[in-house]
Image 1 (cartoon, rainbow, N blue to C red):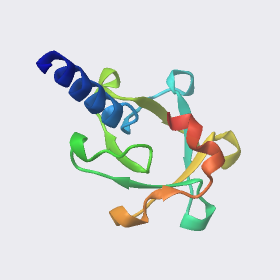
Image 2: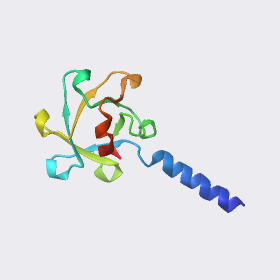
Image 3: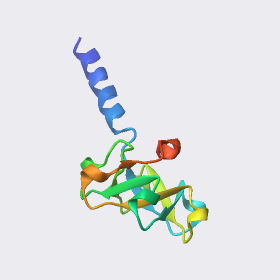
Image 4: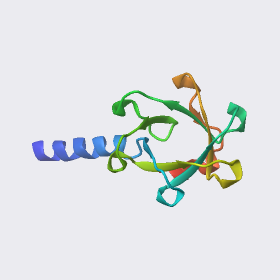
Length: 112
């Protein structure tokens, strides 16, 4: 019985962290999973992003991003493009946690 409980607990922990948003910014576009462009206003964004200070604060595909120092620590690698038409997703960095989230849910699959 103890073994079954441990398996269930392990699966639950994995499910909660499977889509966490640990992000690494790469230097070249061909290294990235997703190309992003930072827009000037929230209403222009597909995703409003709040940068968290610690890994455990990263969200579950809800715009709470933790930027890792190494690529192998990240769930997704991104490349910041120079022009909006080059981007897969347009983002806007918000000042408060509650402002983060998807504005265009059709692009949400890119961060799973």
